[in-house]
Image 1: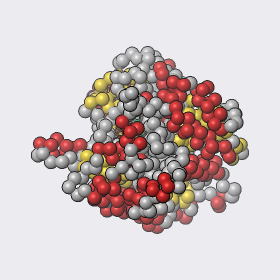
Image 2: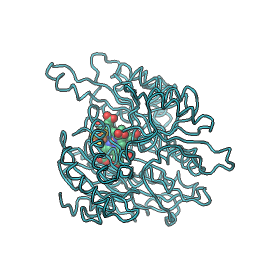
Image 3: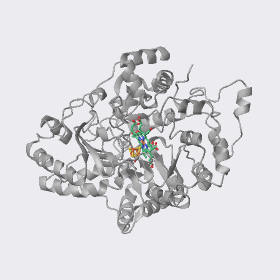
Image 4: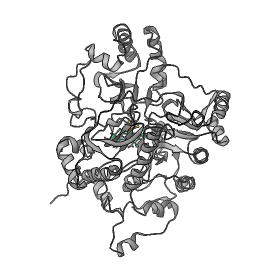
Length: 576
Ligand code: SRM
Ligand code: SF4
């Protein structure tokens, strides 16, 4: 009988619980590369092998090996780091990576450009800061995102605590990470002799595909709950979490031209009590472990398991494994997916003097770096050195300087000013923008993203000015390919790379993150994008109803049909 399983299933099976030949590969100084199968395994350790695509052609001409380096992604549930950790992360960026810290769309950091000979040292330095990269990538439960800023209210702290607990509970247990990167004890043989499994939860094959868990605290949907495999929405009474609405089956990735693949918004599984949440997370993950598609990786995400089996069957199976029924989802309301930028005070401190301040700082596309006249990385380092705050990475690629005593707010402002970092953003469109990394590091990028969106927004700001919309909040996101790393199909304006300089333009997602967009124009470059959006902005400014968001307006104006579920994302398209 032929083995129909996807190649990755066989790699996992033969990997000795994610060890592969990684340790040996690190010793090989002849190449900056590692063995082909280890390309897949190293993801579970939070790293990707990449090459600098800007110099790929030139190096090929000279018959040189590709300019290999490694991307490293940290696991930081809820995105919270202390000033001491921030300083360590900042140091690592200079010592081992490309001198930048990249905040991701999932509340953590990435390093780019770490060469093989520095990889182990970098892992050890991260470990020295009491952080790790375990399961930040790979077919496992990834970094858990929680409503930004555990200091903001009691409910935010409860969301953060749950996120951390789920992250720990669903962490792979193999000794591989400690052995390979931290020179830990070799445990595989010992565990095998004791007749045990190194991975009681994941087994030998882990999950069919990546699995993403997030936790939201209404009215903010900053974590974009409907984009994820598993979500918990806080149900609040008098500011405290009394339970969680559970969502399943969201996801973004698709392939251009393949309507069998599509982004999908999550559905409601039910309601659980606070003490049931970890168990619910585990059982949902196990259903995906056992029911997910292990033959076709393009259809292996949990969203397709939910789509193909149906939400009722998924619920019945989860409840069977739990041994009890989930409740009916409780009412809640989301207002938006963005980060409220600027200063905010703790929402529920008992006395006024206990209230701390929190500054959400816009970081364009998450890249923290120093450029002439705007030395953001140095500013944040100085703030960390002074110990004025903790740092929280947000799911919108921004950073919150959190838990600041009143006496330090002006000091923080002075440091930012001295480094040319403004707390103002040039438009509502930019303030609500995100772009994925794409070129030059991402192997899958078809078009520029992080390096192009800022310039496009500058041009679109002229259009906004003509329509008087400069300060309106409109959500815009760009990705260099259809995988959807900046969640573009949940943006009111989404750009998805097709070819160098050309993007598909999507319109009509809901401002609160509950509805996907629809394709509006195909293969459009910068000039055409402006030509298309210019009149739409004018029309919106003139004809919108009071409080109507851009994404709702374009549907009412008949520019696109509403996408009501992932399985009609590709339907009713009328291209501009
Ligand atoms: Fe992503 C793959 C970057 C969030 C969907 N993503 C990649 C890789 C690793 C490319 C690769 O496989 O070779 C990118 C590395 C680029 C680089 O040079 O750094 C990459 N993804 C990112 C980040 C850094 C984008 C960013 O600009 O911030 C985000 C890191 C998140 C994190 O900290 O864990 C990132 N990726 C996402 C999200 C958004 C989210 O989860 O909220 C999605 C869409 C949601 C989802 O998962 O459905 C996402 N990334 C993908 C996919 C498509 C998966 C699919 O279902 O088809 C791929 C490709 C794949 O897995 O095969 C991918
Ligand atoms: Fe790379 Fe595509 Fe993700 Fe952008 S969306 S980072 S191009 S995989």
